[in-house]
Length: 139
Image (cartoon, rainbow, N blue to C red; front, side):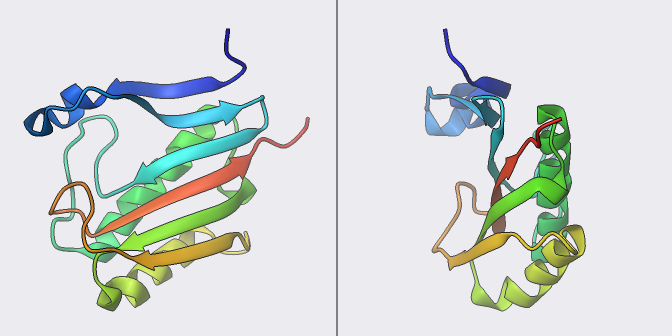
């Protein structure tokens, strides 16, 4: 029996059929009831798995933050309880637009942040990925 709650479980065989993967993952893990780890979110609708805002890094960041907000709420937390975010960009020229988008969502939160430029993400149409670590405050 695990002490962790796993939210929105999925198998990569369904999510990435062209890659012939078979990994059991989830979007969010609540560890020991208080720490929340949110999987890297991209410009993809969580319910339909459809990529959105193709070619628009700021639009993809907007969708990623919308997803993070939804997943944190499902876990019993919220954006205001984010402690750390990591932002991955495929091009440093996207930084200003993406950081402005993320900044609007996290105004007044002051999380620790790490930004990385990477050569690619899991799909070529994805330009930005954002993951988060948050807490569920004591009642």
